Length: 350
Image 1 (cartoon, rainbow, N blue to C red):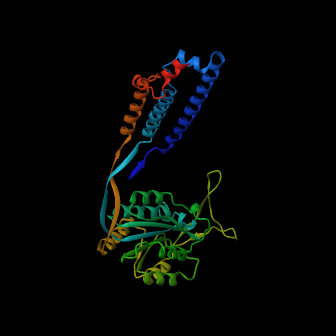
Image 2 (image 1 turned 90 degrees about the horizontal axis):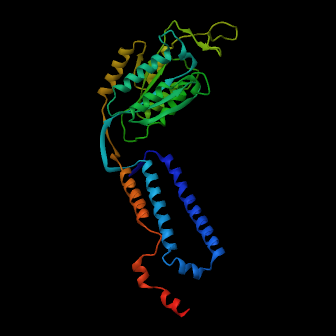
Image 3 (image 1 turned 180 degrees about the vertical axis):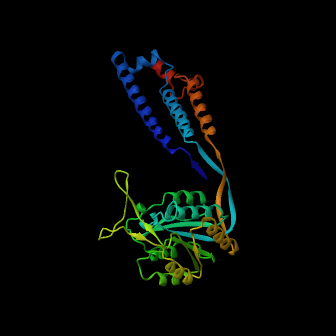
């Protein structure tokens, strides 16, 4: 299997047809110029060793040489062997609440930043487990499909923010509904869904969906971020200043964590509610749950030991250019001796 590291260099292959066009134009111009001064028969006598075929062959060699050198710039790589890697792990999906209420700073630095810290550290402690990320507010959005690429998971997680979801609000049911379709391994018996939220829920069918998820073998754990006293929701102005969200009466909105909603969801999902305000304590509890979970074995096939192959293309490119240099635009003597077209005899008769 091949990989191309820098495919943009392929654009330079457009030089090859340009070279051929220029060669044909120059060849046509030479023939036209020669006809002004003499006819073809006299020209053959004046330059008996001239070879059109050799001229064409030289331009082919130049073109092939350039083509191979251009391909070498793309740094093609070849996988030397196909490895089947056996892994043991569970499937974990994080549903991260990115609604505006998660911007509240009653938990430093903010509810959303605290949630990201917790999820990031949990991912750091994972082994061969697969992880996926869903973000939600008024609706849900698949941020990262289930994967073993933990580095990618952390990168996508850091970019999560309320602006990524078009509809604002807090619909935990949307996240659960999306998660039910997220697991792609039917043989996986241990599926975990961690809902990280402040517990605000604007929908009524969340508990029903939690029950459906549990029937699909998904254990739901909820992590509550925020304080019972709550805090205002900061809104950044265009000029860089900060104001706070207000209701229709002009009063500052105070958002409070709703633990009961999260506890009810975890109870129906056969999981557990965890207060996430203490980062390390939360991480220890979740790690303990995942360590004790039964690990399923799964296989993944991948090419390993990709090796650079550009040197072969450079070698062939230089070889064709050397052939071009060694080729003279004259007929080869042994070909002339064969006299395939009886040229000498024809000349005498004339």
